[in-house]
Image 1 (tube, rainbow, N blue to C red):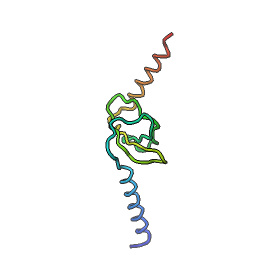
Image 2: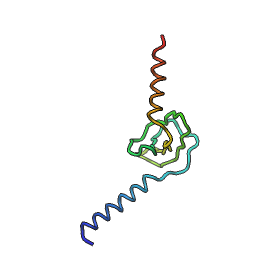
Image 3: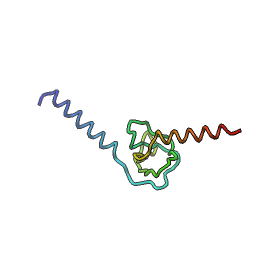
Image 4: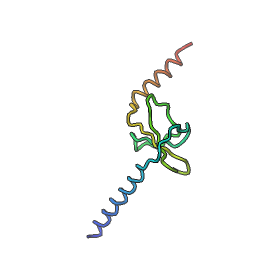
Length: 100
């Protein structure tokens, strides 16, 4: 094995370990707190959301452990239609500001 192949193998092994660690979810939280570090399963590249959103559908929440000194959670939001949810939220906000 050449040095280059060894470096590539080490990088692949490190990436696999980091990916496996990032996907670990603990037990389900049936009554999640409103404030916390919430990670999305649908949008894994998003930063954690600081509070649990009021989703229009049931979203399971799992314990993730500590993140930057705070308890964090994983939201199973794979069934959430974010564009539709945002447009319905915006229409509610618009209709409440239109009234006299």
